[in-house]
Amino acid sequence: MKKYESIKRNLLKDKKVKAEYDKLKGTAYLIDKIIEMRLKHNMSQEEFAKKLGTKQSGIARLEKASTNPTVAYLARIAKVFNKKLSIEFK
Image (cartoon, rainbow, N blue to C red; front, top):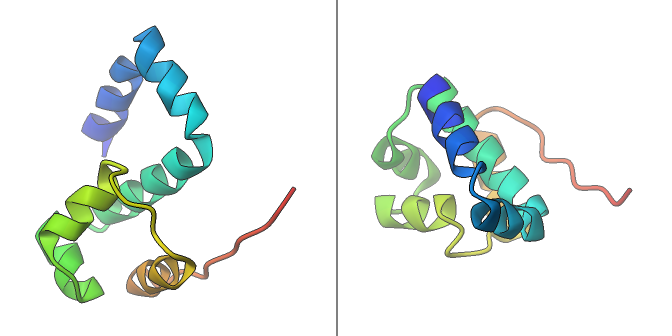
């Protein structure tokens, strides 16, 4: 997981990357958390996909923000990691 955090930190040093990241802050936050949980559980994208009942390519698209997950899909992800999904407006 330290490798992921290091790569992210280095990428965000680029002003253009940081600006895009900030535009998508909510989505980026969700994706970061999903990647962190997957890595914390030492799962490859393929292993995660199998537990989620999808294909590795779908996880890759999710992790690079090529797709927007539905609330139902996020709930399935939460279940894989034995977490509770909580969505709120602040």
